[in-house]
Length: 505
Image: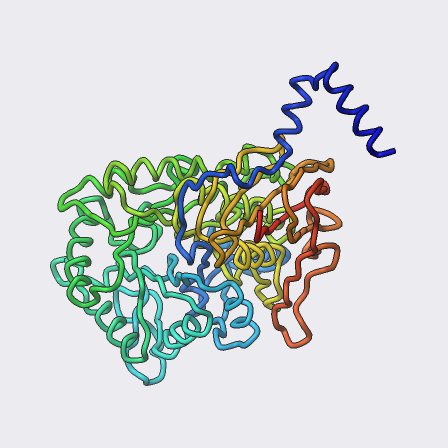
């Protein structure tokens, strides 16, 4: 009977060929693994994260949305400062936190942020000073910094940082001096640590908001950078000098003090081993941002990260041609993220950003933050994983460093291809269906399926192959088990994220 049906189908197609539209649809929905050309390679620590200096030493950070009204009611602060509250130093020795961070390894761990720009390193084991010396705003103790170094060792993280730039770093003539940096580097080495890479200071594009001296300009930056790089070449020759770490241009220009052109066109010309930038597609509702959750799956929003890259990629090409490019700080929105940054809805942006930037040649993407505010991978009170953590974990476990051109499937269905992690001949395919309807594709070989779904978009509970993802009773990361699927048609439910791994094809 089947032979007769097959014969009739062949006869029908011979006399009535498929229309161009149908042929095109079949071609688009078929995964052609052998035709995916290699287009680049990313760092093995491509997916990385930030732990803010503010978290390490304690200080003012973004108030959770549910507490904003009550905290502001009893505060005398004005403007953006009224949206922040005092947080206690993070316990980087907590085993649960280390378990979760280690599961994402290997990574870079960037400890920086605005609070790093005016921090005084207290280079002794005495009680913490009651107040910082003149020209500084806060204090970093040896114990706190040792906690950072020990954390990096425990989670297979290479430490990335930046240094103070405030008035306390200067001599009587206003010249930048390296005394504080020498103390940090010497102590780091004494406890068996290493700073793998460093920016001069955090976000020079917003110098006046980052404790730089009054009237700071491009000429001052060039002079400071020359002194910094000369010192680092002698004191820490293995530490990569990265920068400038600017942000906002091409996307969020408001509040900008110094354009990247002003920073990099002065003499002596700053040069970097790695060109870095920061990206936020918008500011959060907390800071009167306009992004709405109903737009969070739009093609415009998901592709905006490429627009942010384009501006700084052009600057890189102009000032530091051929330097690798790193995105050293990014998240759903500036000012701590929108409320939905902590939900499944943002997992599409998170993975789209990783996939799109890998294809565009970015070598490292550092998410802000690991565990503070709405945009964090982990809840800031319990350290329980949020949906973006599970998305990050799947990327870490499956996506290798080789990047392939995957083509397209259908509108609203985006596809990214890498080698299967640690297997250059295998493939890991990421497919995101942002549509409200089911989609499908044809796969050419047997595969393992890792299907991430949720009962609703704005939820913190997600499922892998239909089973809710959660930690083990001992706060350990569970084993991620794929579901075997055979060659042929694979369904993509509405609003789903699908990883497929192929060891043979």
